[in-house]
Length: 82
Image (cartoon, rainbow, N blue to C red; front, top):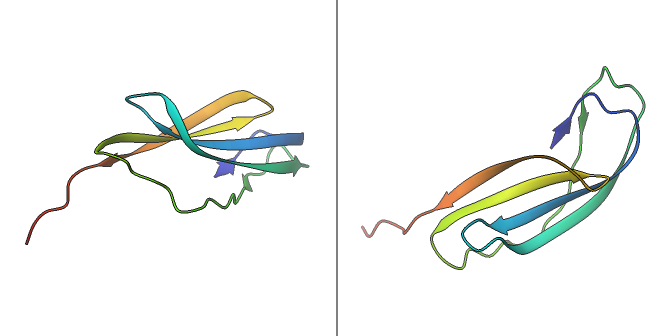
């Protein structure tokens, strides 16, 4: 993920959530020490293989120091049969 307007130390977390149930299926943590709030900072957080138990929407939620920063999602749909 890319952060901007950050300065100082942050404990970061990304949660992988099944939206329909609100269940957290995976999470990963990291740390960031941003020195210049005018610069953008890339954060790389490694996840294990992520489960997709059924079709539906799954969200990646970004947190820093327990403050929600934002999210993005994927929609799981059945595979087309060829």
